[in-house]
Image 1 (tube, rainbow, N blue to C red):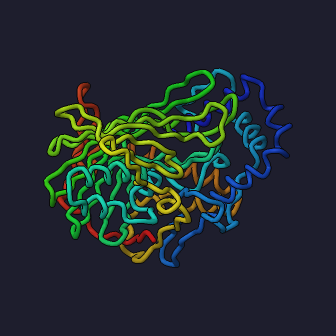
Image 2: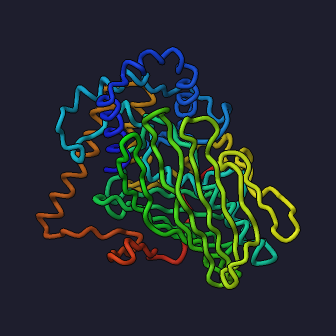
Length: 425
């Protein structure tokens, strides 16, 4: 109920501002740019096994060589906008509107969250754990936090996860489990453990969109925790906000302030994500790493989250690179199913498998029917729970609580995440 409605609102705004004609005039001009986006999505590889209908696709990554499979091609922007207007009337309640499959990428938002953790070209978490000093480990955590920021295309959105949907993937010794613990409002929980490195990660996230006239900014509420148990350190941080710009140049970026702190070592990072108003190579990141006890600035942080981020030592002026996006989020591959028999029926790639395959095959009517079937199953399950007097959903893998002061909090039921039947490459 989140990302799909954002994009529905965006395209209605495009209609209100009467820029469809401009879009049409720019179709030829934008063809190359659109092709790049399509290749990024369209080139996603499918990992489909004979014994299961699980469909898995490549994560978003940097570089023209990141994807190459021509299986999926989104129709051009004008065609998708016109399709949208066939289904929406002025004054329509968008909270009950379902985005046509032409506007979807073949994956769930739950998968996108998971990919930001397990889809990396370098093992950033091991670097966090291997730092000899608290400052070295903290700087590595800052770099890891930046690595979870991934590029997103304009004009298409992942599926809204259904209640109880899960995504379970392993990469090496890191086992990652996500669950959609609330549907309205949409709340996603993540638990990841690496028993060898003795690392634990817990996320609880609720996106809240706000329309700002010529843009939509989605604040991602909730807390992210990274625990380096060998060092007795817990790092808490938030997420930047997703910024969808309608005018003057359509685009998607990450903006806002990210704070990272560790009570055990007293270090704090204050980062600011900034976007360029007129497109181009914006995606700036600026910030500082401080000692909270003295408020002394130890490092200045600067760069672009989609290329290079550096730190400057305030004591001696020395600069060094802490993050290289090309090394970390380029040419990422789709996960593969290693053990089809043990894939849960709530797995994202299974829940949305038929729809994703139809999108990849450009069978739009079949895709529409598949999407309606998933949504209808969810409504039927909701009605069945209500007839049984079960008005509160109980997640299978998390204990969930909410308060006005703390917001949503998600605690994993199990100490360790088990190895997954799906493997990230």
